[in-house]
Length: 89
Image (tube, rainbow, N blue to C red; front, side, top):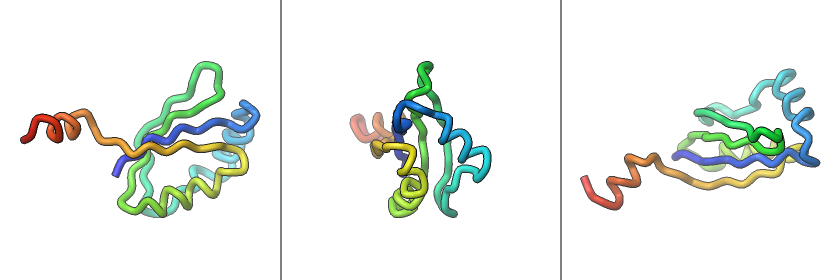
């Protein structure tokens, strides 16, 4: 399953996130895969796509960052998957 994760840096400050990432890495449990990410030009939010078969893995990862990041999680599918769902095979 793919998830769009919208990270809001607490206080609008990305520095704690980048320091932790530099020092400790992504802190993702085994089975949670990072796909890609983008950061807004004002450095206030990050949009990530993460993938896993078990939502509990995503929640475990979120818990490791929740002190410095507020999260929104949206389950998503690819455009091709959406087209198949709407139009059929």
